[in-house]
Image (cartoon, rainbow, N blue to C red):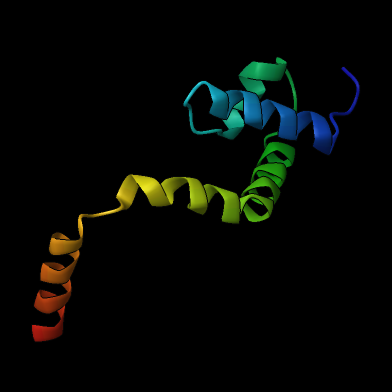
Length: 80
């Protein structure tokens, strides 16, 4: 198999995430059928760095708490 490119690996990572799986070197190896763990790990790290902001923004809605609960937690934290 020809050398995998960054773009190919990033596309595979996105495809894995679209199936609600966390991309790993093992899943990338299964996806392509061959490849190097070190290459997959390198590009997984790059992908995480380049997409950190969008990932955090997407998860922000999942952790929003009702205002009364936020106030209670802040009050509790301030007492510590």
